[in-house]
Image 1 (cartoon, rainbow, N blue to C red):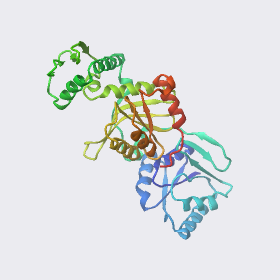
Image 2 (cartoon, helix red, strand yellow):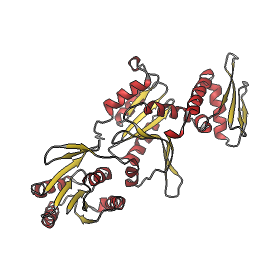
Image 3 (tube, one colour):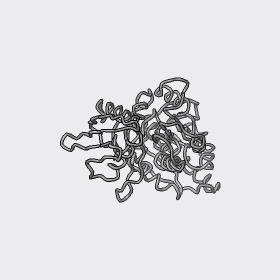
Image 4 (cartoon, rainbow, N blue to C red):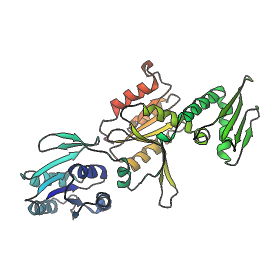
Length: 365
């Protein structure tokens, strides 16, 4: 048989990738009390005949003895061993005992979904399943908006919203905030005479906005995702998604990603998640950062839902201050502002260059 032995630690992604790459007849999960649940979750996901062998994570005598028993049982089979996960003592004894067997191959999977054969020093890219990664971490993603569900009318709407916002940010903010706080409101007029009116029948917003100089701008807004773009600040999120869609390594872009809690209440929301060619890219988009604690919250969410192998990007419209940039750097987050000089490049090209230089570096934090 083709027998695949995989060491199971805290990160399920490389374990799952190794199984997908080898397509074995049987899997042997090496686990500890701490990684039992992850082994069970992976086994349920792949549905390949398997056995589970519990090992102490650090007791060298126990580990050596059990690895030797494993080697004896599968000495006549075609064996592959994935040492990407699990403890270092496990990896050492599997390499020492089984790695020298002529019927065995050792490999590991890195954070870029590359499988490295330690026996012949070859490497190859392995297929990446975005939804499987979420399921393996116990955080299935069902509630999101696909980037492909937006259309040209949404793009025009975002341009109009930016125009209104630029005409008078103060008036724009008051109008939108009032609609956001009171879901049933259909009309709001500011003290300065600016007005936002929701036409339910035609599903469009009529906006009349007056700036500090008394100049009035009248705009009619209509698009499939109008309320999300205008009332829920989704316009900037969608603008960032459009920039990311122009990057040649992005696919399956998802917006408003909501991970549910056990009672189906929203647990956390990530603005944008996409497949970046073998790894997940989590994106937080804000017009500006008011509190640096927003960066801490984003960092925690990325680690919880994405694991060690994913990357994080924080995009702002206004330039980031020094404290925010340092906070992003300390947390291993790529930072980008649409209003930075960016060497005179258009934002989509500057962002693509930044991601190309940063995305495939190995996370150490």
